[in-house]
Structures are given as C-alpha cells and as structure tokens.
Image (cartoon, rainbow, N blue to C red; front, top):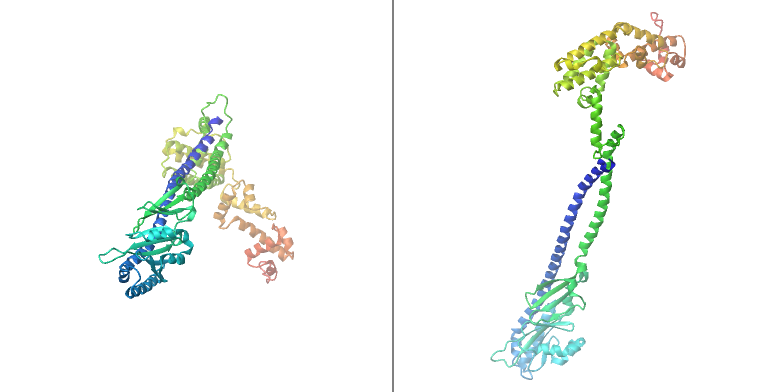
Length: 555
C-alpha cells in the first residue's frame, strides 16, 4: 500500500501545480528574449539614424558653402584669368580671400576652403594667391603621400558636390559652370578632417562603422578594424544630401549580451525555483498527510489480505464503516459535528448540575431550549433528533451518576420524532425526583443550612472553599454557588469570609496579634487577613482595636 500512498499523490499534485507558473515563466522568458533582441536592434538603428543626421548636417553645410562661393561674382570674374591677373582680377582675389576667411571663421566644421584656377594652376585661399604645389606643401605638409591624388581630384572637370577621402581629410568640391564668355574653369574645394566624422560614429561594444559611396562603389573604411561580417549584425542608412550609405556592424556578442545576462539570471532563477518547488511540495504533502497518518495509527495495520489498490482514505473509510456498524450508540460521534454550536460543554455541565441538585423544573426547561435551538433552525431529520435525545439522556445519567448503554434500556426508534423532547423531559423529571431523595437536607433550604453549618465548623481550614464544600455535599460547585446566591442574595465565598472575619473580631477583642488571628481564622497570611478584614468591615484590624466599645455588641 506504501507504493500507492496518497502522500506520493499529493506530492505529485502540488508539484504539477507549482510547475505551471514555472513553465509559464519559461514561455515569458522566450518572448522577452526575442523582444529584448528586437529592442536592441531598434536602439542601434536609432543611434545610426542620429549619426546620419549629424553627418548629413555637416555635409550639407559644406555644400552650402560651395554653392555660395561658386555663384560669387568675384569667383565668376576669375574664370577669365588666362595668365597674370589684371588689377581688376587682383582686386577680385583680395575680395575672395576676405570671403574665404569669413567662411572659414564662421563655419564650425570647415578645416580648409580654397579656390583652384585650372588655367594658371594657382590657388586662392585664406593665406593668399599662391602656386598650387606650394599651397599643398604649406597646408597639407603631413599629407605629402596624397599630393598627386589631391591634384587629380581637384583638377577633375565638372565636379558637382563630389567627395573623396584622401589621407586624414575629406575633400568636397564643385566646379563653376562653363559659360559662353568664360575662358577657364574654377573649382571651389572644402576640406574636413577625418576625425570630425569618425568621432560621431558608433563605437560601443565593438561596433564597426564605415561609409559606402553608392555612386562609385567606393568604401571609406574609417576604422581599421578587421572583422568577419558573418559574426556581425548589419544596419545601414542612406544619406539625404550625398551619395553615401552609413553602415554599422554590431558584433553578435554585444548584440546579445544583455539577452544572455537575462538568460543566465532566468536559468539561475529556474534552478532555485525548481529546488524550492520540490521542497514546498514535499513539505505541504507531509503536513497534510500527518493527520491521515495519525488516524491510521488508531486502527490495526492492514493485513495480508488487504486489496493492493487501497490507499489510506479507502482503508479509513472501510474501517470507519465497520466501527460504526459495531457501535449502535453513535450520539457522541455525531454530536461534535451536528450539535456542537448549540449544545456546548457549558450547557452540558449546567444540565448535569441541575440534575444533581434535583431541580427538575429547570432541567426540563433547559432540555426544551436545547431541542428548540437544534431542531427548528436546521430542521433535523428524525435520525438526528434521536441522536440528540440519546445524548441528552446520557447527560442526565451522568448527572445522577449512573452508567450504562441507553440503547439497551431505552428504545427511541418506537417514539415519533415530534414526541422525543417530551419523552426526554419526562425521563429527566423522574431522575431529578429520585435525586432529590438523596440530597442532604431534602430541599434547598435544608441544603443552605447544612452548608452554613459545615462552613462554621471548618472555616479554620485554609483549604475550605466553594469547590471543597461542593465536593463534601456531592454537588457541583457551580450549582451550589448558584443555589446559595438565589437563596441568600450573596455568594458562598462572601459567607466564608464573613464567618472568618467575625471570629477575627472576637480574637482582636481578646488581644491576639494579627499573625495569630490570621492562622486561627483560615487565612494563609496576615496580609490576606488584613485585606479581607478591611473589605468586609471598612477598617483595618489596627483601626478596629481603637474603635470605642459598644455595650450591646461587647465592643
């Protein structure tokens, strides 16, 4: 039977219940993993878009500068220069130097701006009108390896918003349009340092970024990182002002780093949850099984002929049914479940006390109250009414101190349910009349006199109290106290103290000290005697000694 124990079934049930939220959390984790991955992609895409906006703004400013210079009247005048400039052309060059200086100072991004005259191979810049080669040596002395490439780019005809990366500079150029009267071509060139653009790029978490020229298929590898494109996630954004595409590559390790951290935390949480799930399931199963185990201990162990499919509940049901069939008087068993709320132990003890005192009128009234409280609100069936009647009769038997099986002496099955209350009341009244014949003094008045006489004879005993007195007369202390109060208007304890204090007064008048008086009157100490004496008389023993004598009372 152990292999089919309900303990194991409960454990599996709790385990399944606790596993449901764990499985749900795993599903949520999978969804959150994908959501986080997608969110990171959106974050990188937004960052790349911000980079594009800033670089496009920078390039757009350069193109505006180029356009403004190309349409400048002084630049148009230089298109007629064929050799040595005329005074008028010299004046145009001076004005252009001022204009270039103004552009260079006012623009936060420009690192150089100059005008190249194709016919004379000269340059007009912020430092004046000089030879092309001499200008490059002065201005780009660290870029000597790229001089020829710079010349080739600047001398290219028909440049319009063209850009190229040479060394550490981005060069942007535009040529003047050829007119009917112009004799030569002029190119306006702006230069930006490479790091002005590079510092705007995404570099966190090992990201690689570069610019791709969509027109000529030229890539500007602004970073020298070597990378395997297969291990990167790619993002790109097209420029709105130039034929560039901004490309950003994010390594897989950085791409999924946050998601992996969440994965590790979730895995650790699942392991801990699994352990706690097993622990809690076993604890709850064992806790619920303990009462069953205790009930099993009340019955003999299953024999060899027990069915192998039985569990504890099947076995308890079987044994309980056998027990109920063997015991015909099941009133005590069912009363706990059906009548406890209205037939309490206090009511039971009260009925016992009334029967012991022989008070049939009060006892039958109490039985009627119990029947009314239990029958009418819950509409008890006839069987349950008989169980209640058996229980009340059992209480009456305990009141008259008799024992026996009521089912052998009284057969309530033959009595209609509506007559059960009257039948129990008649039995109780008869029991009380018989009890009255055995109570000392025959009636309540004689009982009071006998009790007071007993107290007067034994008040010196420190143990004398209501319980001791009731035990002497074979009466419940609760009933004895109630009867005495109804008869005299005061409690039995008050009478005991009154007798003791009266004797104390006499001894005080005889000159005894307080300690002796306390011992002779049944108090356990002088403190208790003084406290009760003052409560009864209103004065302390010392004050009582000093009171004037009363001839009638002897004091």
